Image 1 (cartoon, one colour):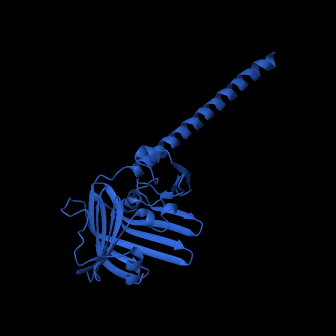
Image 2 (cartoon, rainbow, N blue to C red):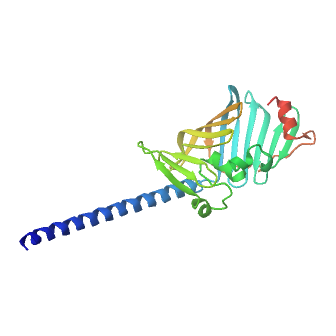
Image 3 (cartoon, one colour):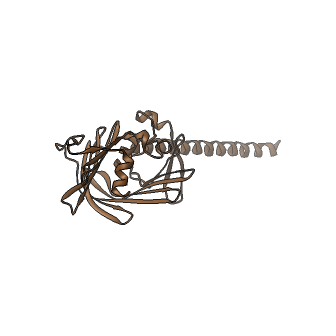
Length: 266
């Protein structure tokens, strides 16, 4: 009986300690889930600005050209290339329903739909996805709003350095972030292809909002290994008067995208 009097308090202490540890583990798990949800929402959320313009230096496998990037949320993305920074030689415009490519040297242009872009289905390419690439946002292809996208995004793991890996459970994109509610890289691979975007040189361009001045796109398809890098400068988020879509002149001839790229030697 006396031995039982000693054993009961010990058992009670063990049960209480186990309960405390269980509660602590549940609390920690809940905190991690809340932080994961907060991070995903922060990276999905629209930037605090609606327009962005920047000078840009483009490098395509060692070939360098200067140009300009202009973006207007939900409406237009324009990337132009110039010769010696003076004469515009080409332009690509991403619009919500189509893509327009212009060769201004030879007065040619092509209009195509996102469905016509190679590997469009594998990468889920549409205007919203291209916009997310360039605005440093995460996304879930085909999701119409933040709530829909959030249901498909999960924190897959966090490594020993604190780097967080977020996965789109349907499309397979992996988003990499090291904190500060900004995206450091994204990647997607499948049968015969690899696609990756890396962001660097973040700077505050509107209050505390950080935008990457460096972007690097890597595309590997079969024997093709393509690297495109862009370096931004003179970034402005002021609203300016520029048309969403460039008017095609009468001198310009419409051709297929394949014909236009062949003419450019691409």
